[in-house]
Image (cartoon, rainbow, N blue to C red; front, side, top):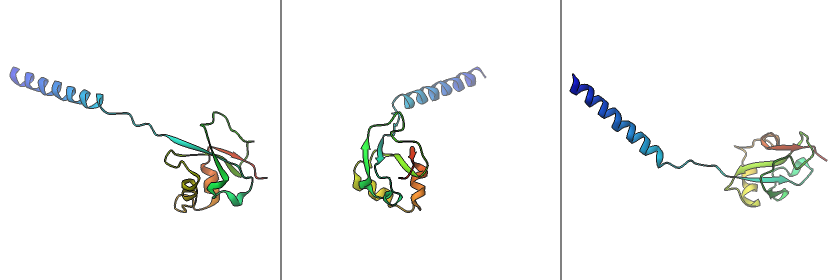
Length: 112
């Protein structure tokens, strides 16, 4: 009986040690983002990558508050050129309509 308790304790100790060891060497994944500011005031340009400029992560809205158009898009860091952004915005599986782009915007603004 004493040997069984000791074996069980040893197995638990080894298991706990392995758990700590495995967690100590795993890296925390940090997702990086790219931010794009919509420069146009027209709804018709929402899907055009050339209508956006890359900006640093905004701490406040860089546009007047509104609901019609995106002001700032927060996208994966791999979308780091206007061409890649253009491809991303034309993906109708992700954005079936232009308003879906506006709805996912970090900040929104009014149309001109």
